[in-house]
Length: 435
Image (cartoon, rainbow, N blue to C red; front, side, top):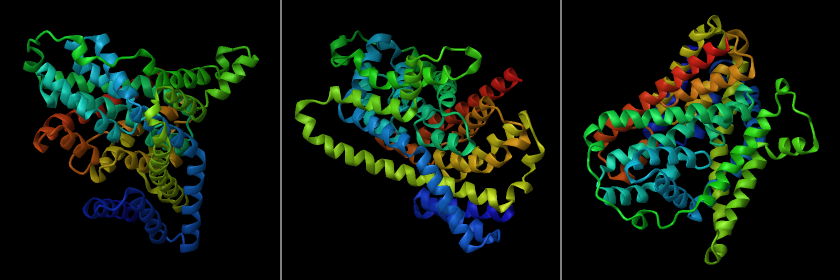
């Protein structure tokens, strides 16, 4: 066990120090752990291939369709229309909470780094128009994006977690949205506490056309319709509801599969493609597939390390096998937070912790579908804690908002601690409630 921990920490440090890609770090950790734990070179390579292949086949279609949806939302300007529509509905004075909520929604299909880059120019415009502090607005957005990133499929971390843990992805989607939205807003309230004076500023009267000249309620359809399909498909599966299995219900079950629902959302984005941009759509497709490939490499490498950990017998040395209930939740949260803090990537933290946790599900007594989802929510909460200088998202928030590092540490990093602890608290509450 000590050998595995040393290899993980060492390789994560080298990854940060020499800018090694996360998927290569995970593959190297897998290979090194297999050799040092005396699995054998041939068997280690076989397990790495098997784990990589199985995860990619299972979640590949979801990642590809989710990335396509996110790319076309960006390129067609649909995301900006969503922002404008939201702000016009909630009002100018509620721009901070609007940015937090819309950040959470947009980050469901769009990777949080890309979504923040996309919306950074909007935030700067809003800051100039409303005279509100750019730090306040940017981090309200950043905390909303970050929450969906660790809790809600089809972002890579939650998808990989559902595959490794063996949880119902539809149920994870529903619970992830509920918990993630609360965690998102907790970041906003923390910022309200830090920016008390900012909230007392008297805004000048602003012509709505100055801010929301491009609103459209239909712009939400490519995101909300897949959410409804996935939720409906998950709900009708439960035998307790005794829903009549008509032809219509069976159709909902099929099109409510996450990869199909997301593909339907992607098709819906095509109505927003302007004639002048039709010639650019092949490039958008190629770019989204390239992005999908990078994400698949990370999640596949996570599957590889999971197989190595299972076969090594190292899990038997973990004290986690002797704990259950709330103690196991707290322990798993701590492991995820430790991995996140050491190496920076929330996705890698989720994948690594899931790989460690999966073989322990029986021993810690978390075997029902809802309990497995609670485990993933707990891991996601730990994987938020803490975003600091070794996290690429930290620097995206800093550089694209022109905020000094010390201010990002003070406001964003502390907010991620509050968010992570909020997610842990919600996991504990749900666990107590179902038991």
